[in-house]
Image (cartoon, rainbow, N blue to C red):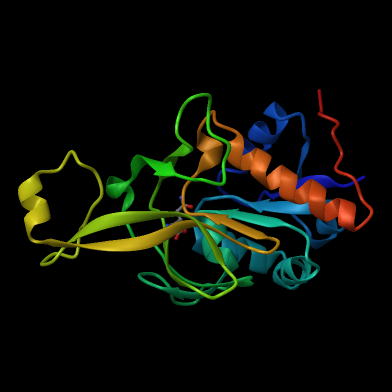
Amino acid sequence: QRSVGVLSLQGSFNEHIAALRRLGVMGVEVRKAEHLEKIGSLIIPGGESTTMAKLAHYHNLFPALREFVKSGRPVWGTCAGLIFLADRAIGQKNGGQEFIGGLDCTVHRNFFGSQLQSFEIDLLVSKLAAKEGGPASFRGVFIRAPAIMEVGPDVEVLADYTVHVNDSTNAKIVTSLRGLEDKKSSSTQKVVVAARQGNLLVTAFHPELTKDTRWHSFFLKMSVENNEEHGLSISKEVAS
Ligand code: GLN
């Protein structure tokens, strides 16, 4: 039996483990390369990707993480985790950061701006089961969030978002709270905020910071199907 691992170096790993527990699945903290041998799928949480990369480098985790991705087992990266899984990156503070790679896309770090530009928005996600009677929307929590600027042919876009960009300051006008006059001198830009390529799933926002476990269910389904193909089953035991 295999468990779902959560990379637990830095960031919102406890929140992911709590979300898995709500679904009756025990998340296993991954801190060393040998921990990856016992798990059937992996979540890479949000946090600060430079710090997380430094810690992963210090613990010599990158070769094992790349092996894990190549082995075909499911990996889900949220926010900083998305940055880790991207093949290419642009944007501020891009220098020096090590990547796992695997997802054929270009990510823009801190696309939406700084902490002050963090926001929440309802996203349309047709792949998620709709709540009773309601549309298939999901409350996206974006914190210093990255965005995917372009994807390769094998990448399936699961959610996108159209943002207004102020033509003179380049600031992103992300909520309707800001004045319409702001929008007059702005152009729109469509970016990808959730995507899948085979065993890799990425979200630019933080499902683990909401009560809604549909993205975790989606990833568990990917994990169960993938592990069954490999003759494994996902452990349903929850630590008491
Ligand atoms: N912008 C952050 C980074 O580059 C990611 C933010 C997050 O994970 N909430 O690391």
